[in-house]
Image (tube, rainbow, N blue to C red; front, side, top):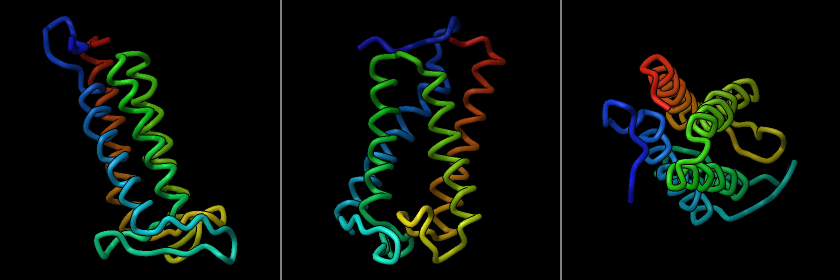
Length: 144
């Protein structure tokens, strides 16, 4: 398989981000679906803890797995790498973290996804910031 490389022959940071974080999102999403496959809404939202720390349910797992699939497909086909890296960083990363923090620890965001701050920070905010840094690095380096 031929990898997307910059002019210097180095694989782009955006592509690394999509491969690594896309794999993690997919694995965590599938893990969430195994731990708690429930798709309750509103007052019926249930949650179980993955790894004893992160609250999750079917909705959380489904969204994570789909974001991971989108990231991996982009990395595999090398289409829209920058755009998908930016989208994953902003939507699955920083945007989700902001929604979770505003919703509050122990609540259910949009009446669907159980919220815990450990998840918001470690599995959304930090990877989102890393994704933005990868995009910014490649823009500055002139990588496309």
